[in-house]
Length: 239
Length: 218
Image (cartoon, rainbow over all chains, first blue to last red):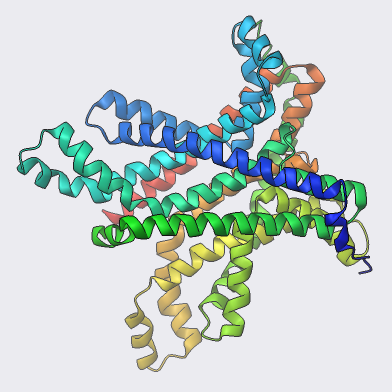
């Protein structure tokens, strides 16, 4: 294997700028779609745990549909198909006037997919940790809605901070899919540098280390939160 | 939403079927190769020697933190460099899939083995069985039963993952559909078809696994 190593390529212009902007896009997509995923996951996960049959059914269909279509296909649906099937004026707006169309589409697609996974965790947390406490909460005289809001939900959510860490990491990895619709995030930029310089080992190593560092930061942060709110103790108590 | 043309699907049917065949091949190779390699990694991780366990743990951690797209690019670039001649995107994608999915299968297998109660192996050893025999006759049968649903779920995930070979221009189901979509200017029909086909296959597989698991525990 003869390969001319040249690590300094990573610090040269414009390659350093490309890679650094790739890191920023990866972070931006991951964070915004994670916020979206948490919001949707919370809503759908709660709906899935309600006694109302209609709410449970709708939430169940959402989870089944979004979890069983590959995320890349979902991205293409939002990007290529949605502008064609909505009324013409909205389609034109999506194609012409939407700011950062690739970024927004990627965030929506990844957020909705990750949201269906988060919803499953929320439901599982409520079921495992929250529901066993429901009779006790009701026995103290709380109204069912109060019991859910003040006891079942907070404890259920605390218990799932650990599992949510892996969902966050999956969301970060999913952000790489956005390169297929033209977002120049970290993976795309490392590929870009490889195409221009043929120094693929250096470029891909940079991306690899980038994902590892981002992943470690997320794991550390989530563990800190988990420790502060006693989530792992709750998980242990439930099993 | 001007007139859907479903005829485009009928006309490109055999091309799409070839794409689905490639997707199936990827799933098959990734699963068989990933399980074999993953089993080896799991045994390494369970070893009491640090020099055996640590490299396997590092490999699994790194692989699981990387997006599959990056891993595909890595092998697409690395393998011709390592063996000195081009081998084509199919070969490099197959290798990338085996190496990537092995990390996930490793964790499933490791958890399955680690969750068999320790007393079981100890009792086996006490009856005079050798380590290999204990593994084969006592630990593995129980571990296999426990890990089966997770392995089946992982196969569904691998099937969804195969759509990513789009980035190295391999003609899997999604990529063939996207070729037809841009050739005939029919993205709506083609991507809807792709989504529905994936949904039907993955949803029925997921529900079957769920049914199988519930039937076994109650």
